[in-house]
Length: 153
Image 1 (tube, one colour):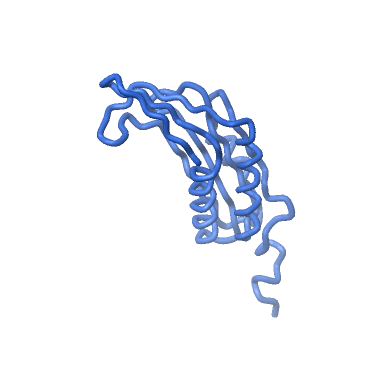
Image 2: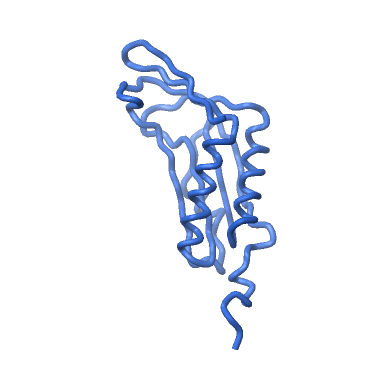
């Protein structure tokens, strides 16, 4: 009798990176979720980052994201690293740039794997590494008139 790891569905897919993008228009949860659909995946983890109305105890009035021209390539590099570390069946990541309002989607990432634990871990690694390594910057304007730049790197 074969062990479960002998089944091809238990392994990472040959090309699991289905969607990587930097967008200047509204992000779609449906697009990202559809991108990671895979018949061999038993677990899909999705993370959605939204613009909140506060940061560091101050009220956020406006927010804008900008990025370096290499940002999308860096997202792909991180996605490839996550796919190599986990048995990823499918992976997707999109980040918004431009002016956003409170409640807007800023980033959506999703990972599907054979099992839920792997999907959760891979999704967490993906979003954490994207936030720390991809050259995307957030410019916040607060209700008291102050401003702040927050960098990913």
